[in-house]
Amino acid sequence: MIETQSEDASQAMIETHREDASHYEDETQNERANPKRRSQMNIPEGVIEHLNYMARTYDGFNKMLTEMKNRLHALNKDARPKDQEEIDGLEKIKSALSRRISKELEYWPIWTEWLVNVPGVGPAIGANLILLYYYRFAPACPVCGTVVEKTEGTFFCPACEKSVKGDGVAYQIQERDFPNVSKWWAFMGRKIEDGKMTKRAKGKAQTWSSKGRLVGYQVGDQFNRRKDSDYGRFLLERKAHREKTHPDATKGHRLNMARNEAVKLFLSHFWHVARTLDGKSTAGPYAEVVMGHTGIIPPFYWDDWKREAA
Image (spheres, rainbow, N blue to C red):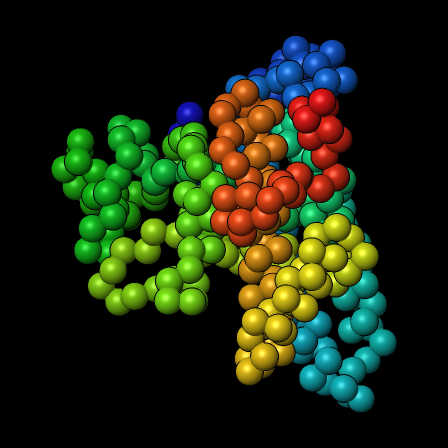
């Protein structure tokens, strides 16, 4: 299935796949009682595309709202009551978008079985994690459907033998697979080189997702705010550890180190839960393989781990 990325096309896509999604809803109604029995890879493309549409809409709206709040804050005493009323109204729209994303996420067992229970991982973050982990939206030729190549600032179709940038780029949904957790970390921009996370380099192809790194930062920020959660306590533990191992580092540097460790632990748990629900093999979790713990840190907030270990 190939759809253009324009807003009109997104709306048309919603209508086109409404019947498909409805049929899928009927088929899986009984399976929802035990969603892990349903493959996360057999979800109709229309449902996936709509989740992508909703997630991108939410992110764009939230960015606009944040910028408005910052401008309003800069006004200080010159702000008017109507300004705050408008902000409050937009906050309600944001909440409505979040609730709609939450309904879409019911198709994915990793959300219903685990992510929905993790403090700090709301529908918007959950949707972006699922889209990043499971799917790649490959640019394709709108005429013949061939996946295009990005060359010299344009998209070139090898089948049509011409640039398709002016015709509007379409997209194909391709499935991703991360056979080990290291590849998942690297894709999310968590690979460490010379003590630092990888950065963009001029003349060198970027192998990690900028969006993935942003989502990872958002996850870490939520854990830092929720110090009474399991991931928040793990972050505090690693921060105290870094105070001993890096006493000369700044507080901000030690916090970033601890936050990165908490995010990598969470991402390893995401990888483990996802592959378990999908019936795929898993290797040792992050704590066992990388941190050298004698015990394994199981995925927090996932009851199935207890049944696995039994």
